[in-house]
Amino acid sequence: MLPIQGLKCIYDTAGRSWSIELVIRAEGEDALRRFDVDGPDDAEMLIEAFEDSSVSVFDPQTGEIVFGYEYLDLDHEDDEDEADEDEEEDSEDDSEDDEAAGDEKVKS
Picture (cartoon, rainbow, N blue to C red):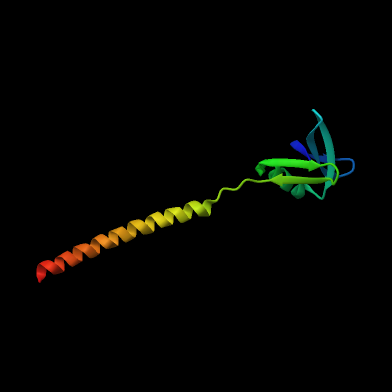
């Protein structure tokens, strides 16, 4: 697997075809590999995937391009916030119950 340094979208005006060119680091120097794509939408999709990825590699044996991503677990943070809010609400409810119980004791 070789790290991808950059992508370039190419339109061949003579052949009227689209391609993507990979700049990869191979044995201390940059090398270029060109792949045909179906159109500008596919080229744009690949470029966005490259820009959004945290790791991008090319496997010369299989010809595969692999994009790796790191994700934040936003649901986990939301769960903690909801748990904190629930605890605060429970403690407020307990305070109100204690006050109501105190009022009843005074009335009797």
